[in-house]
Image 1 (cartoon, helix red, strand yellow):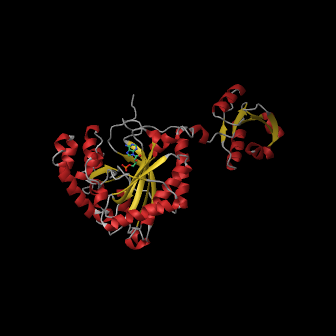
Image 2 (cartoon, helix red, strand yellow):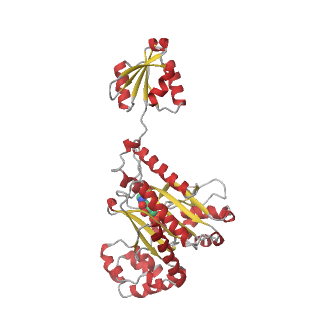
Image 3 (cartoon, helix red, strand yellow):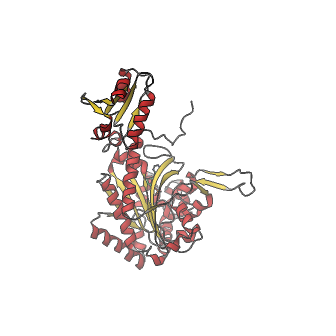
Length: 426
Ligand code: AMP
């Protein structure tokens, strides 16, 4: 038997109803904050991620689905392509390619699958879904302002509250600018020198290539060493410190609670200044529902103009996991308002006509088959979760009145055709 590939999964009804519900709420919130949808390709040139996310990150060094394209055309052959492991690099590529900075400040969002070859476990998949939003524009558009950071964070708080996830925790940090990072990396390198031989092999490599990434290490035995390393907060220059303080001041003004966590550096190289994560207790080990931050140099790193930006990615799979107990999928699944049961030979056409009319009035209708006996129609209507069953037999069609039975209460009434819509809707 052929099964779904390890780390991928089928999203089935009724669960997909919860996914749609969540995406509906998300789109409503994005609309209120004037974000617009962008859809970029699911695969891109490998170089984009290598340059955008960072060669030394776990994502690029070991988790990407990369292949060499074997097209017929000379131009396709040998091109290295990668399934997108995250959305920001592709969005910034599109921003540069379409010169979107000419429009001033851009506020994008995007919902879709991402791919990383990680060890699958609950809340961690190889194909997973992210809800992503980005604010990006030329410096003259105010894209660098702490007001944009605070707006994004406040929007996320609103979004989680609206979904009924009230026990979230916002962890906030500033990872500074490239200058601060150079000094910090140097300090880390020094601090690591005498201790790194006691750390995991990954950290031994990172200590040489990109010491900052040591802070991403999840190996328990390494944690006491990491705990004693210098902190980025000691290396922020004056503009970065002022920016960070301004973000915090706005958050306080709007009443969004946060915790400063100066260990938070996030697993992507492009972050500058504000970095954040929202966590949620119910998720256990994979407790980060979303993460994000500022990436003021990313556009330039990809060969584009100066375009400061800030964004985030919500792990939709994890968001759904934390919602599943609060919002049973059944409660948001649209159920048929009526099941139309054609009764007797030749009734399929009449039933289809009636169904067409009711559906055009936006009613949710399920349609049976004239070969079903009444008992089987009742069973099918009950299984479909219909509110009413509507019998369409020869007598009903002649008389122009139909038997409408409420499946929950058992109450049955005879309804003239003209009143069916209002009766079913009521
Ligand atoms: P990142 O793009 O690494 O900043 O991740 C942003 C969010 O995506 C995380 O907080 C997770 O909620 C989610 N996420 C990342 N990797 C996975 C994965 N393999 N499976 C499910 N969710 C993920």
